[in-house]
Length: 269
Image 1 (cartoon, rainbow, N blue to C red):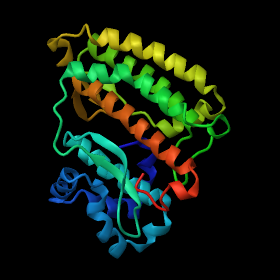
Image 2 (cartoon, one colour):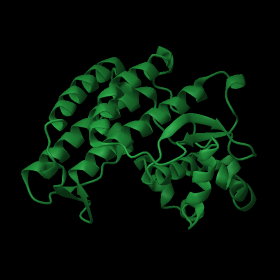
Image 3 (cartoon, rainbow, N blue to C red):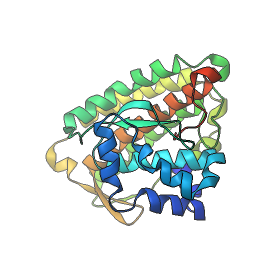
Image 4 (spheres, one colour):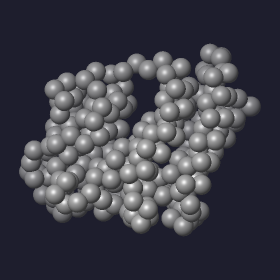
């Protein structure tokens, strides 16, 4: 899940919401809703409204719920097919709609998805008026400028991870705090157009390198945070999921910047 929720995840409310969202059997509910084109987060709407009334006034908590449900669905192989589906009830007004069934994307398809991402981001950025490029959403989240700069910066991190795995047996791969990175590098003050151009160039080079990897290279492992062994293929697939998370958040940011009549009052984010 996005690192911007790490602090909230450690709070009592975050832990209680995670226990509700990830309890045994919940995935079946999320999957059932996905098969009828309904946002997966709707499966917990009634329980959150009944047992967690404080969430109604807590934007970060609602965003966390949406992000955690999305993380669980991606872990089961589902892809977002609609960024904003309507949700009935008083807690969430919208949430992501996922594919009816898990999607087994071949590795070549993963690379193709990575290669298309600069165009997808450029299309989203074109919809953000220039004066609003540094506006952040309610709760916790990044501005459009920060999203583009993070995509560019984290591409560099993933290149370093891939090089480390190819160069040595089981190198340590540390997680990155995107919120800290954005603050340290002052992404808010950077030029999003220049960042997008740099992202496009770097991503093209990365995809060209990935297409040269064979099965032996993809099976090599790194040690995430000194604990979890991940293959190079898993690292690359994680990059695509990371991209998609940023695109989903940009969609949600655009909806929040829209006129009040064009957006719901509450969202899963």
